[in-house]
Image (cartoon, rainbow, N blue to C red; front, side, top):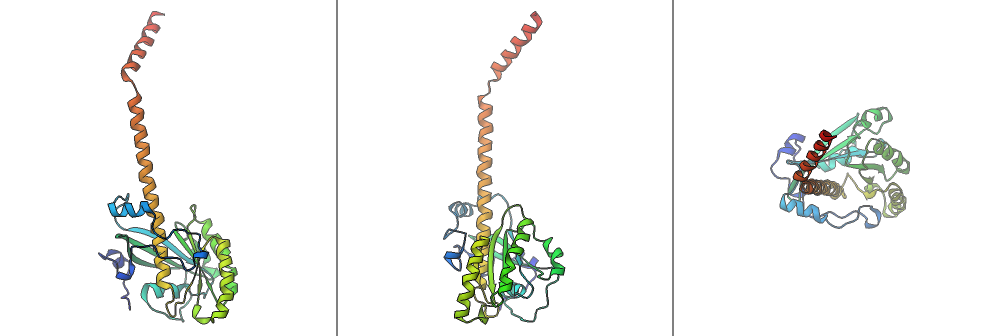
Length: 272
């Protein structure tokens, strides 16, 4: 069992645990149900990490918010991943809970901030204030309760309204252990259709037995890291282009010719 530590201590460790070391992009749960193509990190990301050509120093951080109806298993999902524990008698989350998990991705230190939000309507106004700045949104539903699946578009809409840039979106069905194979296949068809409508990547998990939990969060960490570093690479390239343009502009100026022109104008004014 993983030792439970504070968020600060997790961020300060010199090296992430072995199961938090990522050197290859984890695959999606279903290749047919993801809008995020690519089987590995982008070439510019790998190159930047190898050459240490990154803009910002220190730990990189991505923010993940987990949304969904009350009792769909959001807190169980987070606690299974962060603390390797399962308790089916969790009390309803009030406002938000916060966890941090440390990764090393392509040998670069990286933190995944996980915000577990309340599903009860009376706490929604509190939780929604934490939606801003999300790099990924996880909309969870209960595989045994299709009503919770129908509520997912509204949860995602609230999250997208709070963010000017669209985050990565994941649709996650929980409590897979409670369904037979035949019953699950029926639900999966509806869930994958919903995922396509939401432009989200679909996963099914079980917090009770740990099914797909680690792989799912590793996938989130790797994808958000990929997007973040790729953006940094574009910023580096843009600054170089702007700088080169300014240098070229200065070189095309002719200060001597400009001085002679100003002298002629001054003489013409004095002679008139």
